[in-house]
Length: 213
Length: 155
Image (cartoon, rainbow over all chains, first blue to last red; front, top):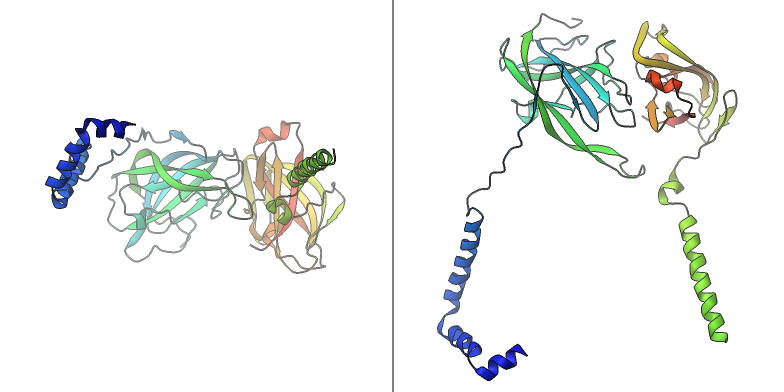
């Protein structure tokens, strides 16, 4: 209907037709590019977008972070050559950093997946991963976290020797994962994609050889 | 009239088929383990496991002195399950779970080889021992059913 009206009056269609005839395809491409640039300009141009890092709450030593999977409180950080009840030395060029934490499993099933619950903020991905965990009361490795039962756990990292000085303040990230549910026949329910949700700043103390030797 | 009857019968068959479809077991149900419910003192015989639970007790501290001397404390309470277990077909380890109030507790690995969870079972050779569970103390005061599950475990 509108076309018929335009045809009848002979103005809009004629104007567009004349414009299409006069302006070459190359210029139309330039115009389209300019329009795209103008629109991107409205959203900050072609500069790399910097997402604002979320500001994480900084907890005091011993304060508990309560998450859907774990509640975690970090009590201290110690540097040592041989970890408690563990006679193996760290890899060449590394030493052990041991955090003492209290953790409660807030989920409905027993789990041993504590390695993703903490990370060292200042280290690269290779070193920030937890090396092992053990139960403080009897040194059981890979301790089970049973639902609603708080336990004291040692969390061990291997860090480059000399990267942390005695009494240096180190920030430990408390991570929180997301529950993905699936059938038992495939993957079952699992906690994935851990992200930092809180920080704890602690002084690191060097202790004498704590292992079995 | 015949067309009407045919239509009604066809509709009824479709409704019946829909009902049957909703009642059919899912893939997960089809392949899930078959539970053999038994009471304490009775023997449950599965495809590759035979289990008899003799008694269940509570303890604040447990001590084991077989493989190593170990004393286990807990912030909660220990559930000590005495049982006799054997495989039927081929040797496996034992998996054990305690379910209460919507929570599932795996048998404790802290006793290591001293508990039934730490040994390799043999077909036709019953092994008697204990399985331990750590649970919060407030759960023992709850008047709710508790389910113990045993299964052959390949891990």
